[in-house]
Image 1 (cartoon, helix red, strand yellow):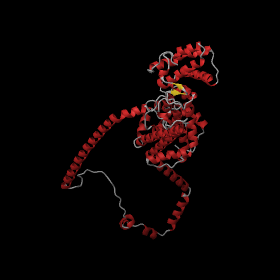
Image 2: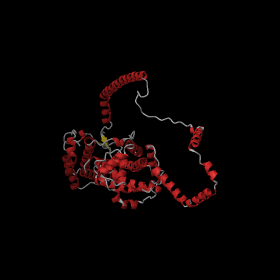
Image 3: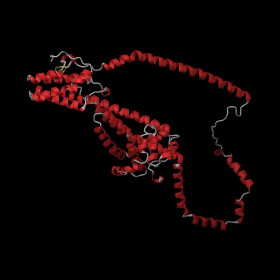
Image 4: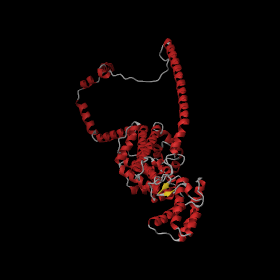
Length: 498
């Protein structure tokens, strides 16, 4: 390792000071670090969200699981930048094979939940260690830094939550209220809220993109600090600088030797004899010099020793009595603390038993299905027992508008009561279509979109569908909404009610 090329001051630091050094590295080489990280992170995240379009939570989970893979590219840039070489994105991607080996599979499986992975990642990637050698190396590096690496992980996880919550709150505040009385800033927290699932996922991805390179750089700084302590890098650099000075001065050594030889050659013998003093005289002179106040400096040293070492027997007995007394008082205090903890647990359980049901009831009552939407009655009692059959009968009699209205109302009743989609008067038909995509299967959502399109054409443009198209909508309705209404226990009115 060419320590002379290191772009940071190599010296033993306090662990949190080393973490701060990692953040400084990101500020110094942030463009290169984030460019390399995002060049891998963004395509993989987009691909996962396209594959798992119907289950975005699974795409976000897999993106989180692949964090150790993305971290390797950020670490590659930081580790090279420290030695004066800031690689470009193309060079980083070209070195992907070297970056991903060894240890990638282990970091994604058995070590995925290692809270100190930012500290041990350089062991795999930079030192190219694996197996038992890597295990021994991780143990050595983690003796004094593992706790701080775990703390770094906890801090960065909290910062990710802060970024995600902030983006969600900002999105909720900017989302049009559409005439509602109030806006729930944390609307994303409600399961099934239309339009927010993708926004939640994007917010989480943005939080990862912001925090993860900082996390990697801080862990690498801890790794450098631990190696500087173990291997004495600061001492090695000082010795190398001293060696350079000695090498530079070596060229003048012959001249110095000639000058000394000339001085001894021309010096008088009696002068040399006076300068060479006997040992006794030298010893007395040393004692006199040491009496100077500059040499009277004393230092206090702390060391552990047995309590009875160097003490009289009586003092030892007094110390034993005081120790026993303090131990007794400590045990009494510990017993009292455990009593307080037990009392606190009892109080919490009683409070939960009393207030938790009310909190859960209030949460369930946040959304109450409306009786009407867009001027249409959407109570279960307003539907006939067989909405699809009634609508088909209306199509046969040529009453297309009434048939489409019945099918549309039946679908809205299913969304509101069976699927618990929180639709309000402020929503439009387009909002209903987007809500159906999150609550229904792909086929049911596509059917609902066709039904809404036919209803809008008939209601707003007076363009009625053909009898065959309307009949097809009536025949398909039960396959998509009939079973949900029955499964949800929606009460249906007697046949004939429209």
